[in-house]
Image 1: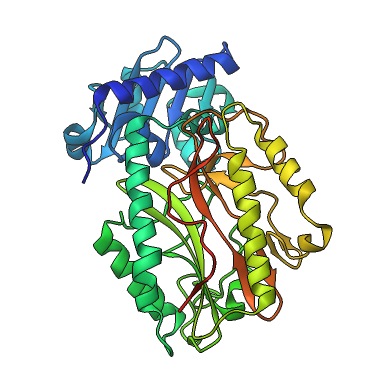
Image 2: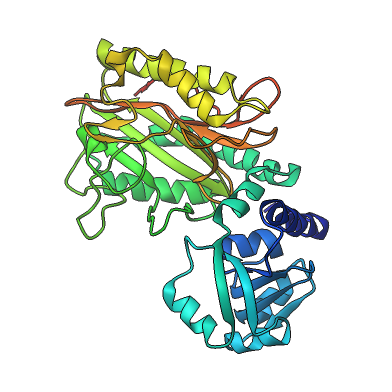
Length: 396
């Protein structure tokens, strides 16, 4: 395990959140952080608690469970026990005119419990603000992301090929894959910012199962174990000669993720159509990566690349049928899905050391999902591929 971030880094993150909120709105009273991921980012520990940042720049972390662990791990000094939200009144007034909080994750019930003790006149969304703060990675964060990328590459190039054996079912393959991931150093789960997103290992599909519709906002598909558990893999679908194998895994090390997809062809060479589609996706990814430079505008990158794709290729591009996503890439960090997003509507310029996964993919009827995904760091020379990919289909 790498060392924890230094206290100075965590304090800089708090200051950056304070300054960024001020740039957006000079008329706010408090920021409440309920999300465990954001609590970890701002304190160095992940508990059932509430982090509060006030307009005067002071802050405190109130913890229900485990206060003991929070005291051991937190990199800030202002950590206090909390039984109910009444306890925060020792730090903050019982009336707040304008509150910024994470509206994507805070439930109505949580707010009702809070309002028993604090009168709130107006609530504004903090989500975009904190995602923009987290988008620019420090050298410490990049060190963890690079280690995740190294392990990710080892997994896809040296481990997965050994696990793909004729007759293995998708669920068993995914279980063996998870075991090998943990042995490599995987931190145990992929974390997503999107509400109620559940994935155990990643999206795994043999043949046309990778085209199966899902609620997950990505190009690929997965049948899963059942309607009640549409993840991991189908028990009945067994690997056979001639199958394409689609493996899309958000890997993570010590909290920080990388994202990569690799397509394998089991037992035979893929058809010329599949190879052509895959290589076109690879070319699209490399062209997009070359544009990942400081001050580039994500929406302009997206539209430039999309305008250069042959119209006929757009059928089933970034999805299958009418199930298409409207992006080419997404930020990666403490969550697999972060800012910035290479899509329309994202007009804030890129900065050096942002981390972005690019994933041009295309469904092929009666075959499966084909394409690529790799993780890049934004540099002055364009995106630096860190996941060891930009690979053609691997034939086994």
